Length: 307
Image 1 (tube, helix red, strand yellow):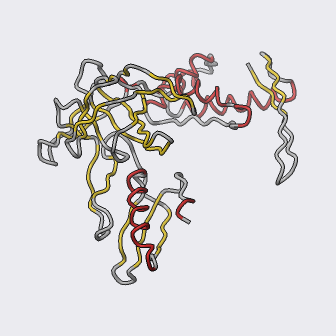
Image 2 (tube, rainbow, N blue to C red; image 1 turned 180 degrees about the vertical axis):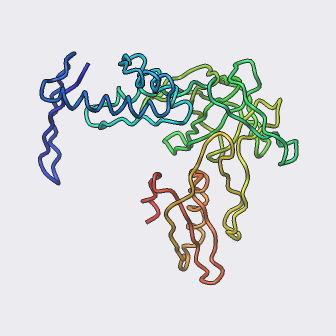
Image 3 (tube, rainbow, N blue to C red; image 1 turned 90 degrees about the horizontal axis):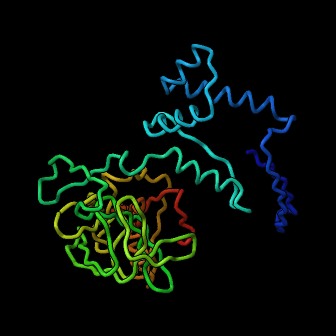
């Protein structure tokens, strides 16, 4: 099925968008040639990373849509191919296609190799593989923090085991016990109360004091999915954390230098602490020559609140 979109834009200061969506099972004649050309390019690119499509191309065989989709998934899971989708949040243009691509092409939890470090062992000890089984000991990662009207909302992904409302979980970094008061599943800005979630699922929890990247367990293991890095920031902050095993966080690409003046010091320090707690790409250090506080962060995470 093909979707045709027509939109109008009223000017740089007034957005007056009208979109007509026309669905058809046939490709319009005006773009049939272009569509065939782009499909051939897709098949040729897949042939370079997938043996099955490569053999079909050599034998001058035409792969079906199912064979192309299966090849895309094999190559994507094998990190040899990256599907790219185009769309817009306006009127959800292309959003459903993107979500379908996530389901069709990305690996399931059982196909992803995720490891953790046993903190009771030396740092040089081998990583422990996690199993996406509900009966296994709980290992969950807090990967996003959000301040709301009910306080800090912590987004967590369960990599192993299960999590239930009212359950006691253990903060791997501090060793503190935390009771889960509410467990919700997020749908955009809507919350759905749930009693429990299993491995591979994402939930949000209220009332948990933690930083982005902290690990939580059920107390039966001493697993941690993060490493600890000491930053030279003087008395302003303590430890900050970076993802070591489960998520890849690129190095920061933007750096700034600020020097607090007068009574701004304490508030400035608290702000930096909060940013480090929320953003694992946010790095801070003091330039001992200029006495300036320098920090680096990723352009993919908005930092306009600093300016």
